[in-house]
Length: 191
Image: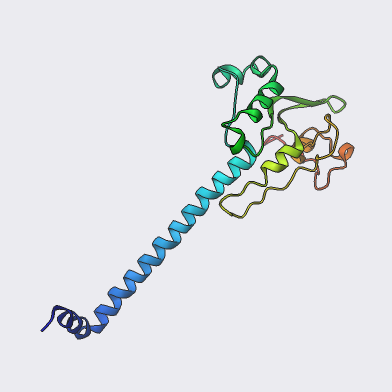
């Protein structure tokens, strides 16, 4: 009697146990495959989103991450246009480049002085056409919800004010922002 026929007879002798074992193996394999796909989707989605909004490579002034948050003006890159052109012309980097674009990020205080309100704000300055080109990067083919900036073709001094900032600074009516009703003031308990 061969080893294979002995194994088959043993499986058929107790069919219920064999089917239960097979079912447990199938359920385990399906769970592993689903979790692996979910994990891969999360990783690829995170990588795609990061590249679309920040790029593959960023260049900052030396010491920016140490002290730049306290004084961003002192850590700007003087002559950044020359640096951008040098990167675009570099014979090693040029074949690998899709977009080279400057970005300015800063935090500060925004105010609506006629309403007597000021709030902390974060601001990002971009070149809209180049940022929109970055948003098209999707090497992994994941579902991307990134929408192009509507600033393409506008002047250099054009801005988008977020709904949250407009609401906090009571600028909804002035900016004609939809779905931007100011929040009701919160009253202290017992007041």
